[in-house]
Length: 386
Length: 157
Image 1: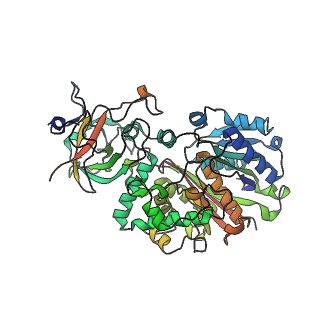
Image 2: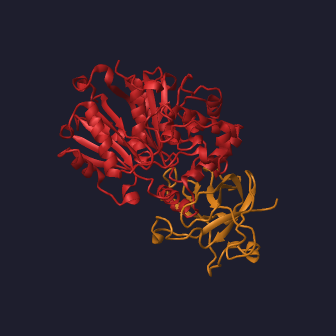
Image 3: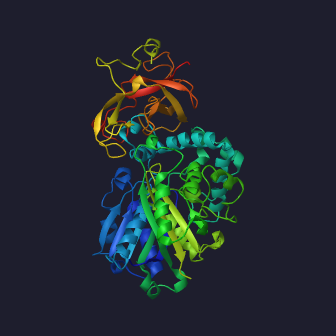
């Protein structure tokens, strides 16, 4: 199986944008082509990660639209929808296309346009992924976070403040990310004093609703240096995807995300490394509680100990294992289909030494993209080429 | 939910139906029980029958009150995951359900608007409601699923 390199990457500014989904995808796609030094018609495959452009905007057929906008015909196109993990699933599809030999040059563009909808409407579009017995009860993804956070705090005797410190950390990291939706620090009192959204979680425990797009270009590692200098590309050394139950209450331990455990096991095995070898990670902090769950289920910390790592500064940018140097979904924003791509973008920037003020010492980085409330997960491991 | 309905022995929340509703879980050949019912058990065993969860006690595993609810959903919406007591002989995976917490008795068609207080470990019982949220107000096609079901209310121990 051919090893796969990433030779180009881009992301738009995340936030409230005037652009619609086609324009967002084209903006990131054109920038990634430029970054890789190629043209649209050089591509064999073109994938779009997107959850719900039809539901949000009434725009379907986005991959073909993007191929048109970037003059990428006759590239094979497909839309990858795996809800909030569409981006990670797109990375998997793009990796697969090159690793299998089906494509010599693939681009993935993830994007979503959401902010023209009210919070209630956007929440309902996202909640439509739930099982009918959950949906009819009026459950939302934030509700699952509240249910799980209460159980986690009770089970592991963790203080409520520890969740707030995730928000404080990630907002601090986002200040140095020019693409982030929020570039403003918040203090713990602000987080803990913000309005309740899903008790015990409050407004600052949640990511915002966001417009944005991100893109990556993939080719075989064996030819990567023909496109970009050797220190400008990264290699996907491990990748894994997995699912957990559709119905959240059916999980044996609701504080464990089985999809994270299983997808990371696959990725670690492929890369020939373990969690201790990871230098930097981007986790799916759609809700602060998810950073605890993932950091434990990825094997970074013992079960029930993830909150202590945040309290002790282990996951700070200057800590032993920096988590969400980009600001995470919490600060950077969460345009559903773009998020998993933007996570890998951040790791790409870190392992190629191009993260600017956010740069940490990193040869190996990991991105974990979660769909639903842990329903579908993709874990990707990147290594710098140097 | 009216006071009468709150105290109703059949446990209804809202308009009563002529048929007594059941809280149906599926039982499989390997002895496991799931809610909701699946085509096969988690181990792949075929379905052999049903279990009415109204016949089993339940306790609150966790709960939340959501203040940002989708169209057609009450606001705030207090939800709990309830784990049912399936008996000493049952050794399958936990049988649980997610459900709204019922409203206290009071004025109005659906009760006082104030839900019962619950906490982790509290014993609860199911209460039938013929409409848990307004069909058609949200994105899901109204005809694609059922909208009645069970809420939970505390039981004194």
